[in-house]
Each structure stands twice: as C-alpha cells, then as structure tokens.
Length: 246
Image (cartoon, rainbow, N blue to C red; front, side, top):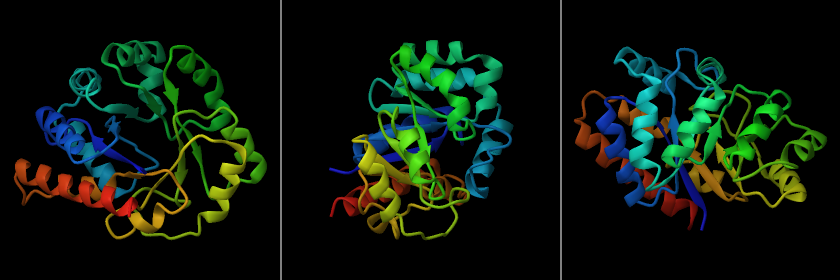
C-alpha cells in the first residue's frame, strides 16, 4: 500500500489543535507526520505554508513547543521534524537529536541543507539511530542521483518540479523515478503540488506522496472553526490515501 505523509505547521492555530489534528490524521490512514518547524524565511515553501509559519511565530511559537507536542504524538504515529537548518544550527544538532530520541521522533527533513554539506550531519544523525531524508530534484543528473541515493534511508523525497511547495506545475517524473529505482530499493515519495486532484497521477511509479499546502490552505481558512478544519483536512487526507491506492 502506498504511503501518505502529511505536513502540518506546528503550533498554528494552537498547540492543542496541532495535537488533535495529527491524531485525527492518524485515524484516517495518514502514515507519517512531517511536523513543520515555524521559521521566518521558509525558502522551499510557497506563500500558503509561509503564511502559516509566520502566524505560528506571531502566536508565540517556541522550539520547546515542538518538543512538547512531539512527546504526545510521536509515540502514536511515525513523525519527522521538517525545518530549515538555521534552528538546528543555532540551538544545536545535539539538542535536536536528544529531544527526538526522548519523544520517539524518527528523523529530520532539512530542505535547505544541500546533499554535500549534509554529509557530516547525516553521519551524526544516523549514528544515533535517526534518519535524515534525502531530496532528489527533476534537474539532478543520473550520476548525482546515484550518489545521493547510495546512502538514502527511510524514504527519498522526490521534488515534483523545480520550484516551491504549493505551486501548480506538472512534469513527467517517470524517467527520474526509473533512474532512482535503478540505484536503490529505498522507497520514493513525491512531494510539491500533491492534492486531491493530482494525487492519483503523482503517485504513479512511487511508493508514497507528501501533502502540505493542500492541508495548510484549510488550516488558514478563518471562516472555519477548529473542529471544522480538523474534519475537512482529515476528509481530504482520507480521500488522497484512497486515490493513491486505487
């Protein structure tokens, strides 16, 4: 069965909401939570996730909130922390590793840390039994793909197009998927631009999909109550999980 990864911005609209939202997503079949760490300059994310990041920060989000929430959810559903390198660097990778292990978080996704620069950190993270997710982009050559996937673990994050999250692009991913699978048995999950309309097509040839902006768009809809947001996001997640496995 193909997997569904759900990105949720930590702490918006509230810390309790984040916990309730994630537990509801677990109930409808989401396999992994990508718990987003709010940051003021999320360079890989489009305006929807960027807005949620800023709202969470304006509401007083602190890194300790991430650690506290993770203790509640990570023992119940596979959880990864998605964040930019700045917080990891300033607070200290050792602190993040220690807190991840305490809360049973399984690893990190750091989209602005290039593969070459990530290697010293990857070794430290993996030696502690955690994962650092590797990215592949449509612009990567076969040689670079082979190099990146040689040490990949858990899953490979295939960026669906060269750009930011939430954009409406379409590219033929089959050639790059074929190249990846020539060199590794690590599962391949596709992200960027995955929603109810695109999920079935995007899931072709891969082992899972990563959905973020489609959920966060609803999270930001101030016309909805928190309960309505949870119900609507959960319903969409259930629909996507069904579509990718048709």
